[in-house]
Amino acid sequence: MDAVVADVAQSTVAMLVGAMLLRSGVSKLRDIDGAVLAVLDYRVVAKSLARVLAPLIAAFEVTIGTGTLLGFDVALAAAVLLLALFAFVVLSAVVRGLVIDCHCGATAEVVGAPTVVRNALLASLLAAGLLVDDTYAQNLLVAPLPYAVCIALTLGMIAALAGLLRLTSLATESAVTPGIRS
Image 1 (cartoon, rainbow, N blue to C red):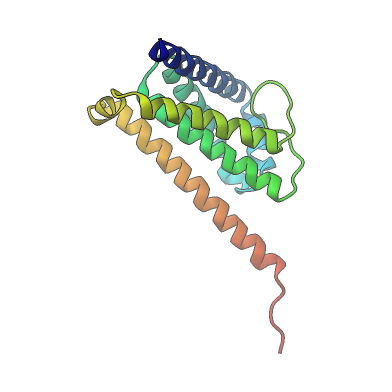
Image 2: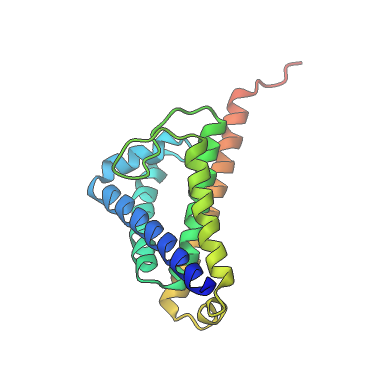
């Protein structure tokens, strides 16, 4: 009975996350200019990079959301990474005192602790479900090339965004910090 409850809970969280990502991605794809502005609102990348990242983020959301709804373990793992990345970026906006829309979907939501907690909680619940699933490791090890590419692209995007956030932070610090005068 406990295994059935765990499976239902894991499936429910996966369906919720999949639908959320799919809805958010489709919303961004329908309004790419708005998605570019959404990326710019977070103030972590330059406008030229935002024009590239916005459609990529939307495509990742649609792809990972669809895969999650279809129950692919690799998509579940990618959703964990994507939600963790979103939680990190939102947290950075909150820490910097930005009062901006989350751009999480079709409805407006100002970023704040609830947004960070929601993304981190959903990522944790998905991760916990994957860790308990004994077939996950087997499926991941024999993942066909498209799944491996999906994982590589997701990890690459996360690394690139984290690096860009750091570079932007360094550039902002050097622009604000006055030079030493002798």
